[in-house]
Length: 182
Ligand code: B4P
Image (cartoon, rainbow, N blue to C red; front, side):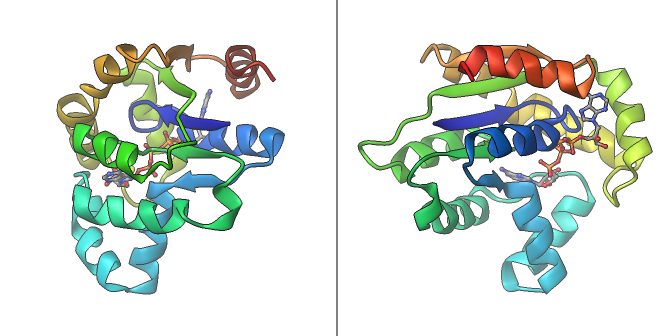
């Protein structure tokens, strides 16, 4: 099963991706994690991504697509995967279409819906380096202008499902399981 987890910053994409991947025994492909690893390793990609991430912007489509292309081609993705935080722009979604083999398709885009105000507190409590009020504001700005347009994009394909993310983690996962039938 191939799944996309979609939602604003801190909506719980990463949290739920871990649950789904454990159940389905498929890899968790988080572009946020991949980019943070690149920053820590000091690679060329990491050097380009560092400042953008620190400011709450989106890393270029070109960079993100190249890391996803490499990752999705690995053997462990043949039986499915969960994409967490990717695609985040229309260009990335179009790029993803062209990365998929003919026999691969995205079955579910799970949109985790949350209330922005409560999320700010959630993120501040988590305390990652990009979880500072000013940066969070920019991350929401990027989400609202560049990522939201993906909602009609996937709605038109009838694969977008809304999940209420304002519940306990276990309850959110229960709702996801109902949608994907596991
Ligand atoms: P991400 O790593 O994707 O981070 P995120 O959107 O903030 O987090 P997520 O929704 O996964 O929240 P989480 O489960 O951790 O992106 C970071 C940055 O990387 C971006 O700003 C961007 O710069 C760059 N980037 C990544 N992908 C990109 C792309 N495709 N293109 C361009 N740039 C890209 O949950 C957050 C907190 O809430 C946790 O502490 C968790 O425990 C808690 N929580 C989760 N669910 C909860 C619940 N139901 N109730 C209470 N708390 C909950």
